[in-house]
Image (cartoon, rainbow over all chains, first blue to last red; front, side, top):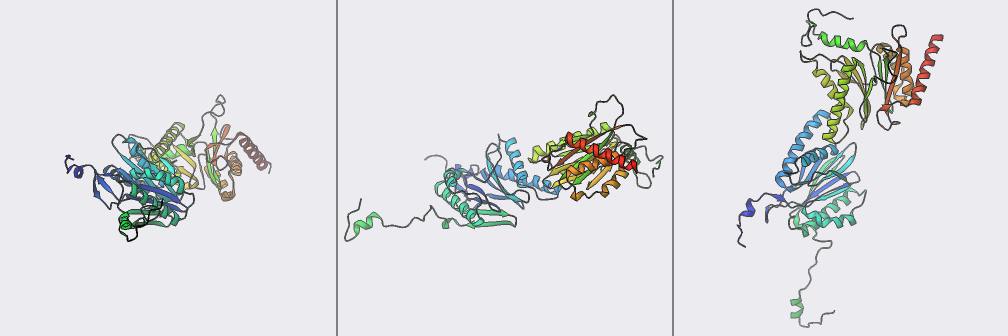
Length: 237
Length: 249
Protein backbone atom coordinates (compact mmCIF):
# COMPACT_ATOMS: atom_id res chain seq x y z
CA UNK A 1 0.00 0.00 0.00
CA UNK A 2 1.58 3.23 -0.98
CA UNK A 3 -0.92 5.75 0.40
CA UNK A 4 0.42 8.25 2.88
CA UNK A 5 0.59 6.56 6.28
CA UNK A 6 -0.13 9.82 8.13
CA UNK A 7 -3.37 10.43 6.17
CA UNK A 8 -5.43 8.61 8.77
CA UNK A 9 -4.08 10.61 11.68
CA UNK A 10 -5.12 13.92 10.15
CA UNK A 11 -8.49 12.78 8.79
CA UNK A 12 -11.66 14.15 10.39
CA UNK A 13 -12.72 12.28 13.49
CA UNK A 14 -15.78 10.21 12.85
CA UNK A 15 -17.58 7.93 15.18
CA UNK A 16 -18.24 4.69 13.44
CA UNK A 17 -20.35 3.76 16.31
CA UNK A 18 -22.98 1.72 17.97
CA UNK A 19 -25.55 3.73 19.92
CA UNK A 20 -28.74 2.48 21.50
CA UNK A 21 -31.62 3.93 23.51
CA UNK A 22 -34.39 1.82 25.06
CA UNK A 23 -37.38 2.65 27.22
CA UNK A 24 -38.24 0.42 30.14
CA UNK A 25 -40.86 0.35 32.82
CA UNK A 26 -39.93 3.58 34.64
CA UNK A 27 -37.36 5.30 32.46
CA UNK A 28 -34.82 4.95 29.69
CA UNK A 29 -31.36 3.41 29.23
CA UNK A 30 -28.87 4.85 26.74
CA UNK A 31 -25.88 2.74 25.67
CA UNK A 32 -22.89 3.24 23.40
CA UNK A 33 -19.47 1.86 22.46
CA UNK A 34 -16.37 4.02 22.91
CA UNK A 35 -14.40 3.99 19.66
CA UNK A 36 -13.63 7.24 17.82
CA UNK A 37 -11.81 6.55 14.58
CA UNK A 38 -10.03 8.72 12.03
CA UNK A 39 -9.89 6.49 8.97
CA UNK A 40 -8.36 3.23 10.18
CA UNK A 41 -6.69 4.79 13.21
CA UNK A 42 -8.51 4.64 16.54
CA UNK A 43 -8.16 8.22 17.77
CA UNK A 44 -9.86 7.56 21.11
CA UNK A 45 -10.57 4.04 22.39
CA UNK A 46 -12.45 5.17 25.48
CA UNK A 47 -14.57 8.09 24.35
CA UNK A 48 -17.87 9.03 25.96
CA UNK A 49 -20.56 9.26 23.32
CA UNK A 50 -23.37 9.79 25.80
CA UNK A 51 -23.58 13.52 26.46
CA UNK A 52 -25.65 15.45 28.97
CA UNK A 53 -28.06 18.16 27.81
CA UNK A 54 -29.93 18.78 31.06
CA UNK A 55 -30.35 17.03 34.43
CA UNK A 56 -32.94 14.74 32.91
CA UNK A 57 -32.06 14.54 29.18
CA UNK A 58 -29.01 12.89 27.60
CA UNK A 59 -28.08 12.14 23.99
CA UNK A 60 -26.08 9.48 22.15
CA UNK A 61 -23.96 10.92 19.36
CA UNK A 62 -22.90 9.24 16.11
CA UNK A 63 -21.49 10.36 12.77
CA UNK A 64 -19.05 13.22 12.65
CA UNK A 65 -17.68 13.86 16.14
CA UNK A 66 -17.30 17.61 15.54
CA UNK A 67 -20.80 18.05 14.13
CA UNK A 68 -22.50 16.11 16.90
CA UNK A 69 -20.56 18.00 19.58
CA UNK A 70 -21.54 21.37 18.15
CA UNK A 71 -25.19 20.39 17.86
CA UNK A 72 -25.24 19.15 21.43
CA UNK A 73 -23.53 22.36 22.67
CA UNK A 74 -26.12 24.56 20.96
CA UNK A 75 -29.05 22.48 22.16
CA UNK A 76 -27.70 22.51 25.73
CA UNK A 77 -27.48 26.30 25.56
CA UNK A 78 -31.03 26.69 24.18
CA UNK A 79 -32.44 24.22 26.71
CA UNK A 80 -30.78 26.10 29.54
CA UNK A 81 -32.50 29.33 28.50
CA UNK A 82 -35.79 27.51 27.96
CA UNK A 83 -35.63 25.99 31.46
CA UNK A 84 -35.06 29.42 32.99
CA UNK A 85 -37.95 30.92 31.02
CA UNK A 86 -40.35 28.09 31.82
CA UNK A 87 -39.33 27.80 35.48
CA UNK A 88 -39.22 24.01 35.35
CA UNK A 89 -37.12 21.26 33.69
CA UNK A 90 -37.48 20.97 29.93
CA UNK A 91 -39.32 17.95 28.56
CA UNK A 92 -37.56 15.28 26.47
CA UNK A 93 -39.83 16.18 23.56
CA UNK A 94 -38.66 19.78 23.55
CA UNK A 95 -35.00 18.72 23.69
CA UNK A 96 -35.52 16.34 20.78
CA UNK A 97 -37.29 19.01 18.74
CA UNK A 98 -34.42 21.46 19.24
CA UNK A 99 -31.97 18.81 17.99
CA UNK A 100 -34.24 18.15 15.04
CA UNK A 101 -34.47 21.89 14.24
CA UNK A 102 -30.68 22.19 14.00
CA UNK A 103 -30.23 18.90 12.13
CA UNK A 104 -32.89 19.65 9.56
CA UNK A 105 -32.03 23.29 8.95
CA UNK A 106 -28.35 22.47 8.43
CA UNK A 107 -28.76 19.14 6.73
CA UNK A 108 -26.40 20.07 3.90
CA UNK A 109 -23.54 20.72 6.26
CA UNK A 110 -24.03 18.27 9.09
CA UNK A 111 -23.53 14.56 9.34
CA UNK A 112 -24.93 13.41 12.67
CA UNK A 113 -27.23 10.69 13.87
CA UNK A 114 -28.49 11.41 17.37
CA UNK A 115 -30.60 9.50 19.86
CA UNK A 116 -32.26 11.69 22.52
CA UNK A 117 -33.37 9.99 25.74
CA UNK A 118 -34.61 11.19 29.09
CA UNK A 119 -37.32 11.34 31.70
CA UNK A 120 -39.82 14.08 32.50
CA UNK A 121 -42.81 14.22 34.83
CA UNK A 122 -45.41 14.53 32.06
CA UNK A 123 -44.49 11.65 29.72
CA UNK A 124 -42.08 9.55 31.79
CA UNK A 125 -39.18 7.90 29.94
CA UNK A 126 -39.02 8.70 26.22
CA UNK A 127 -36.61 7.95 23.36
CA UNK A 128 -36.41 10.00 20.15
CA UNK A 129 -34.33 9.00 17.13
CA UNK A 130 -33.01 11.81 14.91
CA UNK A 131 -31.10 10.26 12.00
CA UNK A 132 -29.13 11.97 9.23
CA UNK A 133 -31.71 14.11 7.41
CA UNK A 134 -33.28 15.61 10.52
CA UNK A 135 -36.37 13.41 10.86
CA UNK A 136 -37.67 13.10 14.38
CA UNK A 137 -39.26 9.83 15.41
CA UNK A 138 -40.46 8.87 18.87
CA UNK A 139 -39.75 5.18 19.42
CA UNK A 140 -39.86 2.65 22.25
CA UNK A 141 -36.23 1.91 21.35
CA UNK A 142 -33.75 3.35 18.86
CA UNK A 143 -30.44 2.19 17.41
CA UNK A 144 -27.87 4.14 15.43
CA UNK A 145 -24.35 4.26 14.09
CA UNK A 146 -22.52 1.89 11.80
CA UNK A 147 -22.79 -0.99 14.26
CA UNK A 148 -26.55 -0.76 14.38
CA UNK A 149 -26.84 -2.56 11.03
CA UNK A 150 -26.08 -5.78 12.86
CA UNK A 151 -28.69 -5.19 15.52
CA UNK A 152 -31.96 -4.77 13.61
CA UNK A 153 -32.74 -8.47 13.59
CA UNK A 154 -31.50 -8.86 17.15
CA UNK A 155 -33.90 -6.23 18.48
CA UNK A 156 -36.80 -7.54 16.45
CA UNK A 157 -36.36 -10.77 18.36
CA UNK A 158 -35.16 -9.62 21.77
CA UNK A 159 -37.13 -6.40 22.41
CA UNK A 160 -40.22 -6.51 24.59
CA UNK A 161 -42.51 -3.87 26.07
CA UNK A 162 -42.37 -3.06 29.79
CA UNK A 163 -39.00 -4.56 30.76
CA UNK A 164 -37.53 -4.03 34.21
CA UNK A 165 -34.45 -1.89 34.64
CA UNK A 166 -32.16 -4.95 34.96
CA UNK A 167 -33.62 -6.62 31.86
CA UNK A 168 -33.25 -3.46 29.83
CA UNK A 169 -29.67 -2.88 31.01
CA UNK A 170 -28.67 -6.41 30.06
CA UNK A 171 -30.32 -6.03 26.69
CA UNK A 172 -28.42 -2.83 25.96
CA UNK A 173 -25.03 -4.20 27.04
CA UNK A 174 -25.55 -7.41 25.09
CA UNK A 175 -26.58 -5.52 21.97
CA UNK A 176 -23.60 -3.15 22.04
CA UNK A 177 -21.26 -6.10 22.65
CA UNK A 178 -22.65 -7.97 19.67
CA UNK A 179 -22.25 -4.95 17.44
CA UNK A 180 -18.70 -4.37 18.66
CA UNK A 181 -17.91 -7.99 17.79
CA UNK A 182 -19.00 -7.57 14.18
CA UNK A 183 -18.44 -3.88 13.35
CA UNK A 184 -14.83 -2.81 12.90
CA UNK A 185 -15.71 0.79 13.51
CA UNK A 186 -17.16 0.05 16.96
CA UNK A 187 -15.14 -1.09 19.93
CA UNK A 188 -13.61 -0.33 23.28
CA UNK A 189 -15.88 -0.31 26.32
CA UNK A 190 -19.64 -0.18 26.78
CA UNK A 191 -21.05 2.84 28.58
CA UNK A 192 -24.65 3.05 29.76
CA UNK A 193 -26.69 5.87 31.27
CA UNK A 194 -29.96 5.12 33.07
CA UNK A 195 -32.46 7.99 33.52
CA UNK A 196 -35.62 7.72 35.60
CA UNK A 197 -37.64 9.64 38.16
CA UNK A 198 -34.93 9.17 40.75
CA UNK A 199 -32.13 10.62 38.62
CA UNK A 200 -29.25 9.51 36.45
CA UNK A 201 -26.83 6.56 36.85
CA UNK A 202 -23.76 5.94 34.73
CA UNK A 203 -22.30 2.45 34.30
CA UNK A 204 -19.15 1.19 32.65
CA UNK A 205 -18.42 -2.26 31.24
CA UNK A 206 -14.74 -2.90 30.39
CA UNK A 207 -14.10 -4.25 26.90
CA UNK A 208 -12.36 -7.42 27.93
CA UNK A 209 -15.29 -8.59 30.01
CA UNK A 210 -17.88 -8.43 27.28
CA UNK A 211 -19.34 -11.66 25.90
CA UNK A 212 -18.34 -11.87 22.23
CA UNK A 213 -21.33 -13.83 21.19
CA UNK A 214 -24.20 -15.37 22.98
CA UNK A 215 -22.10 -18.05 24.58
CA UNK A 216 -18.49 -17.49 25.45
CA UNK A 217 -16.32 -19.28 22.88
CA UNK A 218 -14.78 -22.21 24.71
CA UNK A 219 -11.27 -23.36 24.05
CA UNK A 220 -11.12 -26.67 22.24
CA UNK A 221 -8.18 -28.81 21.10
CA UNK A 222 -6.68 -28.02 17.77
CA UNK A 223 -6.30 -30.62 15.05
CA UNK A 224 -2.53 -30.81 15.60
CA UNK A 225 -3.02 -32.08 19.16
CA UNK A 226 -5.20 -34.90 17.92
CA UNK A 227 -2.62 -35.93 15.32
CA UNK A 228 0.21 -35.89 17.87
CA UNK A 229 -1.69 -38.00 20.36
CA UNK A 230 -0.49 -41.53 20.91
CA UNK A 231 -3.70 -43.02 19.75
CA UNK A 232 -5.14 -40.93 16.96
CA UNK A 233 -8.78 -41.81 16.60
CA UNK A 234 -10.54 -41.52 13.35
CA UNK A 235 -12.63 -38.36 13.15
CA UNK A 236 -16.30 -39.03 13.28
CA UNK A 237 -18.29 -37.66 10.41
CA UNK B 1 -60.93 57.49 43.02
CA UNK B 2 -60.04 59.12 39.74
CA UNK B 3 -57.65 62.02 39.88
CA UNK B 4 -56.34 64.27 37.17
CA UNK B 5 -52.60 64.24 36.80
CA UNK B 6 -52.27 67.68 35.34
CA UNK B 7 -48.92 68.13 33.69
CA UNK B 8 -47.68 64.63 34.36
CA UNK B 9 -50.13 62.83 32.17
CA UNK B 10 -49.12 63.94 28.72
CA UNK B 11 -46.73 61.11 27.98
CA UNK B 12 -46.44 57.47 28.93
CA UNK B 13 -42.76 58.05 29.62
CA UNK B 14 -43.45 60.53 32.43
CA UNK B 15 -43.82 59.59 36.09
CA UNK B 16 -45.87 61.74 38.43
CA UNK B 17 -44.31 62.88 41.71
CA UNK B 18 -46.19 60.16 43.56
CA UNK B 19 -44.81 57.45 41.30
CA UNK B 20 -47.74 56.92 38.94
CA UNK B 21 -47.80 56.72 35.18
CA UNK B 22 -51.10 58.41 34.37
CA UNK B 23 -51.28 57.39 30.73
CA UNK B 24 -51.41 53.74 31.78
CA UNK B 25 -54.16 54.50 34.28
CA UNK B 26 -56.14 56.32 31.61
CA UNK B 27 -55.72 53.31 29.32
CA UNK B 28 -57.23 51.17 32.07
CA UNK B 29 -60.26 53.50 32.09
CA UNK B 30 -60.93 52.50 28.48
CA UNK B 31 -61.19 48.92 29.66
CA UNK B 32 -63.37 49.88 32.63
CA UNK B 33 -65.93 51.49 30.35
CA UNK B 34 -66.40 48.53 28.05
CA UNK B 35 -68.76 45.58 28.25
CA UNK B 36 -68.05 43.08 31.02
CA UNK B 37 -65.82 40.08 30.40
CA UNK B 38 -65.92 37.22 32.91
CA UNK B 39 -63.67 34.17 33.17
CA UNK B 40 -63.78 31.28 35.65
CA UNK B 41 -61.70 28.17 36.22
CA UNK B 42 -63.90 25.18 36.97
CA UNK B 43 -62.60 21.83 38.06
CA UNK B 44 -62.42 20.47 34.53
CA UNK B 45 -61.77 23.57 32.42
CA UNK B 46 -62.24 27.29 31.76
CA UNK B 47 -65.38 29.25 30.84
CA UNK B 48 -65.19 32.76 29.36
CA UNK B 49 -68.25 34.97 28.90
CA UNK B 50 -68.65 38.44 27.37
CA UNK B 51 -71.40 41.06 27.64
CA UNK B 52 -71.21 42.31 24.07
CA UNK B 53 -72.99 45.69 23.99
CA UNK B 54 -74.68 46.13 20.65
CA UNK B 55 -74.12 49.57 19.16
CA UNK B 56 -76.72 49.35 16.43
CA UNK B 57 -79.71 47.17 15.53
CA UNK B 58 -78.28 46.84 12.03
CA UNK B 59 -75.37 44.66 13.22
CA UNK B 60 -75.57 40.99 12.40
CA UNK B 61 -75.81 38.82 15.53
CA UNK B 62 -72.63 36.87 15.99
CA UNK B 63 -70.45 39.49 14.33
CA UNK B 64 -67.80 41.61 16.06
CA UNK B 65 -66.67 38.68 18.16
CA UNK B 66 -65.06 39.54 21.48
CA UNK B 67 -63.76 36.04 22.21
CA UNK B 68 -60.99 34.71 20.00
CA UNK B 69 -59.15 31.40 19.82
CA UNK B 70 -55.43 31.83 20.20
CA UNK B 71 -54.42 28.22 19.68
CA UNK B 72 -56.15 24.86 19.70
CA UNK B 73 -55.98 24.80 23.48
CA UNK B 74 -56.53 28.45 24.43
CA UNK B 75 -58.68 31.53 23.88
CA UNK B 76 -59.02 35.16 24.93
CA UNK B 77 -61.95 37.37 25.86
CA UNK B 78 -61.16 40.99 25.02
CA UNK B 79 -62.39 44.17 26.73
CA UNK B 80 -61.74 47.81 25.87
CA UNK B 81 -60.86 49.25 22.48
CA UNK B 82 -61.73 46.55 19.95
CA UNK B 83 -58.95 47.36 17.50
CA UNK B 84 -56.32 47.30 20.24
CA UNK B 85 -57.69 43.98 21.40
CA UNK B 86 -57.38 42.60 17.89
CA UNK B 87 -53.65 43.36 17.93
CA UNK B 88 -53.15 41.60 21.23
CA UNK B 89 -54.92 38.51 19.91
CA UNK B 90 -52.84 38.60 16.72
CA UNK B 91 -49.64 38.77 18.77
CA UNK B 92 -50.78 35.91 21.00
CA UNK B 93 -51.56 33.74 17.96
CA UNK B 94 -48.17 34.53 16.50
CA UNK B 95 -46.34 33.69 19.74
CA UNK B 96 -48.22 30.41 20.11
CA UNK B 97 -47.46 29.47 16.52
CA UNK B 98 -43.75 30.26 16.68
CA UNK B 99 -43.36 28.44 20.01
CA UNK B 100 -44.84 25.28 18.58
CA UNK B 101 -42.67 25.52 15.46
CA UNK B 102 -39.52 25.76 17.55
CA UNK B 103 -40.22 23.47 20.49
CA UNK B 104 -42.60 20.96 18.95
CA UNK B 105 -45.23 21.18 21.69
CA UNK B 106 -48.24 23.50 22.24
CA UNK B 107 -47.22 26.60 24.15
CA UNK B 108 -47.75 26.25 27.91
CA UNK B 109 -50.47 28.71 29.01
CA UNK B 110 -48.16 30.28 31.58
CA UNK B 111 -45.60 31.00 28.87
CA UNK B 112 -48.28 32.41 26.56
CA UNK B 113 -49.55 34.72 29.28
CA UNK B 114 -45.97 35.86 29.99
CA UNK B 115 -45.36 36.66 26.34
CA UNK B 116 -48.64 38.55 25.90
CA UNK B 117 -47.99 40.50 29.09
CA UNK B 118 -44.44 41.36 27.95
CA UNK B 119 -45.79 42.63 24.64
CA UNK B 120 -48.48 44.77 26.28
CA UNK B 121 -45.87 46.12 28.71
CA UNK B 122 -43.50 46.87 25.85
CA UNK B 123 -46.00 49.32 24.47
CA UNK B 124 -45.92 51.34 27.70
CA UNK B 125 -42.18 52.01 27.53
CA UNK B 126 -41.80 54.32 24.54
CA UNK B 127 -43.09 57.84 24.00
CA UNK B 128 -43.85 57.11 20.37
CA UNK B 129 -46.21 54.26 21.24
CA UNK B 130 -49.41 54.45 23.22
CA UNK B 131 -50.48 51.80 25.72
CA UNK B 132 -53.08 49.26 24.61
CA UNK B 133 -56.56 50.39 25.55
CA UNK B 134 -57.71 46.85 26.16
CA UNK B 135 -57.34 44.05 28.67
CA UNK B 136 -57.74 40.36 28.02
CA UNK B 137 -58.82 37.31 29.97
CA UNK B 138 -56.82 34.35 28.68
CA UNK B 139 -57.95 30.81 29.37
CA UNK B 140 -56.31 27.60 28.28
CA UNK B 141 -55.81 23.91 28.98
CA UNK B 142 -52.32 22.41 28.79
CA UNK B 143 -50.49 19.48 30.39
CA UNK B 144 -50.62 21.29 33.75
CA UNK B 145 -54.41 21.45 33.59
CA UNK B 146 -56.79 24.38 32.98
CA UNK B 147 -55.42 27.86 33.75
CA UNK B 148 -56.87 31.37 33.70
CA UNK B 149 -54.83 34.55 33.33
CA UNK B 150 -55.72 38.20 33.03
CA UNK B 151 -53.53 40.76 31.28
CA UNK B 152 -54.13 44.46 31.98
CA UNK B 153 -53.09 47.48 29.86
CA UNK B 154 -50.16 48.07 32.22
CA UNK B 155 -48.68 44.73 31.19
CA UNK B 156 -49.41 43.11 34.53
CA UNK B 157 -50.57 39.51 34.38
CA UNK B 158 -51.81 37.30 37.18
CA UNK B 159 -53.26 33.84 37.34
CA UNK B 160 -56.82 33.62 38.68
CA UNK B 161 -59.58 31.26 39.76
CA UNK B 162 -62.08 33.84 38.57
CA UNK B 163 -61.63 37.24 36.91
CA UNK B 164 -63.78 40.04 35.54
CA UNK B 165 -63.05 43.26 33.65
CA UNK B 166 -65.23 46.00 32.21
CA UNK B 167 -68.26 47.91 33.43
CA UNK B 168 -69.78 45.31 35.68
CA UNK B 169 -66.57 43.89 37.11
CA UNK B 170 -67.19 44.79 40.76
CA UNK B 171 -70.60 43.14 40.83
CA UNK B 172 -69.31 40.23 38.76
CA UNK B 173 -66.39 39.59 41.12
CA UNK B 174 -68.77 39.52 44.08
CA UNK B 175 -70.91 36.93 42.32
CA UNK B 176 -67.88 34.84 41.30
CA UNK B 177 -66.66 34.75 44.87
CA UNK B 178 -69.93 33.13 45.91
CA UNK B 179 -69.33 30.20 43.57
CA UNK B 180 -67.61 27.00 44.72
CA UNK B 181 -65.37 26.83 41.66
CA UNK B 182 -63.46 23.70 42.67
CA UNK B 183 -66.72 21.72 42.61
CA UNK B 184 -68.27 23.19 39.46
CA UNK B 185 -68.03 21.40 36.16
CA UNK B 186 -67.79 23.56 33.02
CA UNK B 187 -71.36 22.66 32.09
CA UNK B 188 -72.55 24.16 35.36
CA UNK B 189 -70.02 26.98 35.02
CA UNK B 190 -71.52 28.08 31.71
CA UNK B 191 -74.92 28.53 33.39
CA UNK B 192 -73.36 30.48 36.27
CA UNK B 193 -71.38 32.81 33.99
CA UNK B 194 -74.52 33.54 31.95
CA UNK B 195 -76.41 34.40 35.14
CA UNK B 196 -73.60 36.71 36.25
CA UNK B 197 -73.45 38.57 32.97
CA UNK B 198 -77.20 39.00 32.74
CA UNK B 199 -77.12 40.08 36.38
CA UNK B 200 -74.51 42.82 35.96
CA UNK B 201 -75.95 44.21 32.74
CA UNK B 202 -77.39 47.63 33.42
CA UNK B 203 -80.66 47.86 31.44
CA UNK B 204 -81.12 51.51 32.24
CA UNK B 205 -77.74 52.80 31.11
CA UNK B 206 -76.83 50.43 28.31
CA UNK B 207 -78.51 49.24 25.20
CA UNK B 208 -79.21 45.62 24.43
CA UNK B 209 -76.42 43.15 24.56
CA UNK B 210 -75.49 39.79 23.11
CA UNK B 211 -74.06 37.06 25.30
CA UNK B 212 -70.93 35.45 23.86
CA UNK B 213 -69.43 32.42 25.58
CA UNK B 214 -66.62 29.97 25.04
CA UNK B 215 -65.02 27.14 26.94
CA UNK B 216 -62.02 24.84 26.96
CA UNK B 217 -62.55 21.74 29.06
CA UNK B 218 -62.57 17.96 29.20
CA UNK B 219 -65.94 17.90 27.45
CA UNK B 220 -64.58 19.93 24.55
CA UNK B 221 -61.59 17.61 24.36
CA UNK B 222 -59.27 20.33 25.63
CA UNK B 223 -60.03 22.43 22.52
CA UNK B 224 -61.09 26.05 22.80
CA UNK B 225 -64.49 26.48 21.15
CA UNK B 226 -67.78 28.36 21.32
CA UNK B 227 -70.14 26.92 23.90
CA UNK B 228 -72.49 24.59 21.96
CA UNK B 229 -75.71 26.24 20.79
CA UNK B 230 -78.01 24.06 22.91
CA UNK B 231 -76.11 24.72 26.12
CA UNK B 232 -75.88 28.44 25.34
CA UNK B 233 -79.65 28.66 24.94
CA UNK B 234 -80.13 26.73 28.17
CA UNK B 235 -77.78 29.15 29.92
CA UNK B 236 -79.56 32.22 28.57
CA UNK B 237 -82.94 30.83 29.63
CA UNK B 238 -81.64 30.08 33.13
CA UNK B 239 -80.12 33.56 33.39
CA UNK B 240 -83.33 35.28 32.34
CA UNK B 241 -85.32 33.16 34.77
CA UNK B 242 -82.94 34.07 37.59
CA UNK B 243 -83.35 37.78 36.75
CA UNK B 244 -87.13 37.53 36.86
CA UNK B 245 -86.92 35.79 40.17
CA UNK B 246 -84.86 38.66 41.54
CA UNK B 247 -87.22 41.24 40.13
CA UNK B 248 -90.19 39.41 41.56
CA UNK B 249 -88.91 39.78 45.13
